[in-house]
Image (cartoon, rainbow, N blue to C red; front, side, top):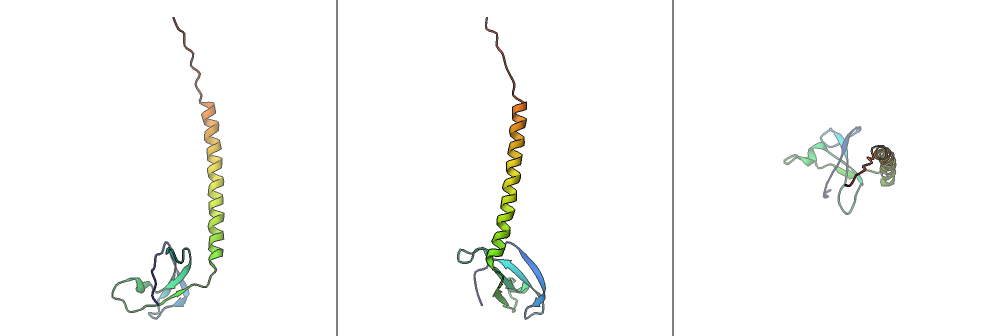
Length: 103
């Protein structure tokens, strides 16, 4: 199989091996056609001159990984809200009152 491959992360999966008998990698597609979709690939298939062309879509539903990302993003937003509140409190405590005497 051939496809445009763009991966942001990969992990070894020891129970599955490719034609080279190497542990396959699970990567994440960054293509417009399949954003976030997981696929399995031989570690050698991305190296020029290697003969193994093992590649297949991972059957894990994309929604599961998207749900996990949403949870992470919500936690990040919550942390940022807390940080903004703390900064606002500090700002209120650092206000300087200036009085001027005009002649």
